[in-house]
Structures are given as C-alpha cells and as structure tokens.
Length: 173
Image 1 (spheres, rainbow, N blue to C red):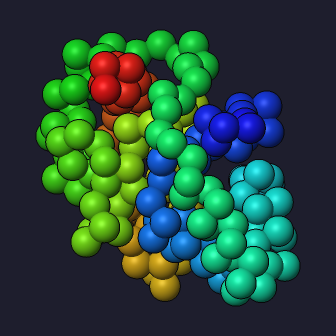
Image 2: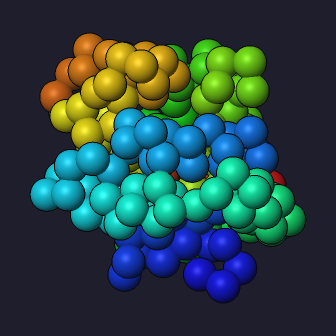
C-alpha cells in the first residue's frame, strides 16, 4: 500500500516500521536468490527477485532509506479466524525467545519484527518456511534456522491462533 501497510491482492506484505538492517538483509536475500527462486511456490517472491537483481547497490540503499522512513502502523486484517488467547500461549512457548515478548524481533538474532505484519503474510511465510520455499538454502543462515524450527513443529501447529494474538497486540500498541 501507499503507506507501507501491505496489499493482499498482490501479496505485498506490510513494510512500514521494518528496520533498515532487516530490509537490507531481505533485499540481499532476493538479490542472491535465497528468496523468490521458485515461481510456482512463490510468484510474488519471484517478482521481487527479478526487481532486486536489477538494483545497483546505491539504488538498494536509497530504497531502504526511503522505506525505513515509513512509520509503523497496524497491518490490515484479512478476516482469518484464530484464537488470540491460545495464540498467546503458543507464541510465548515457541516464538518469543527469538522474536521477543513484544514481537519486535532481534537485530542480534537477525529475526524480523512480527508485530505489524499482515495476518495473511505471517501464515503464508510460516508455510513457506515449512516447505523450504523460504529458508531452504543453508547459506541464508537466519532463514534456514527458521525453516528447520518450523519443520520440527507438529503439522497442526496453530499458526492462525498466533496470527490472531499478534494482531491483538498490534491493535493495543
């Protein structure tokens, strides 16, 4: 969206409030084809890969600086159902050690903030980590760690509940 809030119609996630270092790492991941390399599994990622590979280092930095100026805002809700109370318990047990109690991520652990992401994007990313579309390349160590972690979770892991919980804390912030 025009304010960095994401757009489900084109599978563009919310980018408002994302740290410059995380934006830089993700653009590098596209440029290195760690992300977006499988068009059939991730057409939006493949489109992003083709754009990122065209950018010069200076253009890359100018885009990152421009995007970093967007102020964090609650992401749009897609209508996905989930139990926020159950999601909180699962988030605290499985996610908070790396993504933080407030879901702001960690520069040290190279984990992204989850607090202002669209619910549909959280679920989509989780599924891409599970099947290796994201994090399948061991050269992308942070994403590969997430891929391995998600693969170890049960098939019926309640990601919709976690997305509902994250939405509830985003609204209250």
